[in-house]
Length: 375
Image 1 (tube, rainbow, N blue to C red):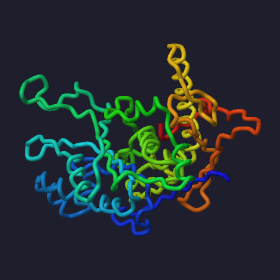
Image 2 (cartoon, one colour; image 1 turned 135 degrees about the horizontal axis):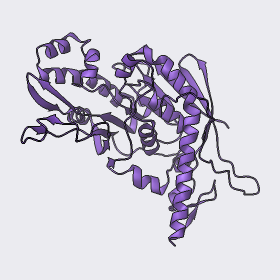
Image 3 (cartoon, rainbow, N blue to C red; image 1 turned 120 degrees about the vertical axis):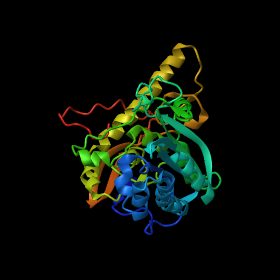
Image 4 (cartoon, rainbow, N blue to C red; image 1 turned 90 degrees about the vertical axis):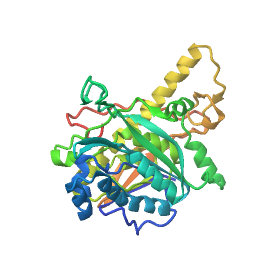
């Protein structure tokens, strides 16, 4: 039976996702507009009260009103997530001078408070060192104490669960979960609470105004979270889709995707991104296999035993939980209906004679002279 994932983009407000059934989403990966960051003022100021608060330089009032707008989306997340479903929210705090006073506006704390009030359980969060700022970018009075300010170099990935652990009851569900496993060495890297290896990303949109309205995280951040907190065939939601990174990562990982975006100007970028999603996914999967095989070589060279063998690919793995691991390769993408995409996959097959499936190698796309939007 062929493996297919489906991805839908809806250009609508995620405040009311009335067309999404309750308990139908398995994972949320998103990054909302950041309150009190000036690049997002125009979006938030569509609400008159927020515009007035900023005009009157009432920072605390504007901060709270902006978050009340986001709260409506967080309310919807609680409704649409399955029991045990996970929500990952990438957010940065803001610094801003209001009435001559420089202050921090703690976006992560305000979101965390509302999410736990809704009933979500806050799991250990991740600090992502974004590396778009540096301490030598002086804030305040340079080298003169005590008026110099700490430079924000990190963002948060807040992680919430709806209720207790998600249950996998049927034999098919349990098998799919085992096949959706990740490598032992990936687990050691991914499940650290500080990510130092990811850099911020800039989309090559060719549109300065559009780029200003995009706060996209890198593909790897979304791909990693989707691999960590969902299984193949799950549905991943991004209520602030932007350029579409979450859906491209879901497609690469064999998950379904649903995205909401208010600005239709992103539509051609999302469509172009889906055209590149196959190469992007195959490249990332090839890197995972290359990384694992190098890990095996290094471990064997150090004389450390590896006790288990993966059933599909025939290579050594550290734990019994990796024995059934398999990673389908994205093969084709089509758009049968506008803004509805289907991705097909090739799954690893063990031959009748017991010969292991081919191991995907690091994917090197042909040089076309075209830039990839979503590196």
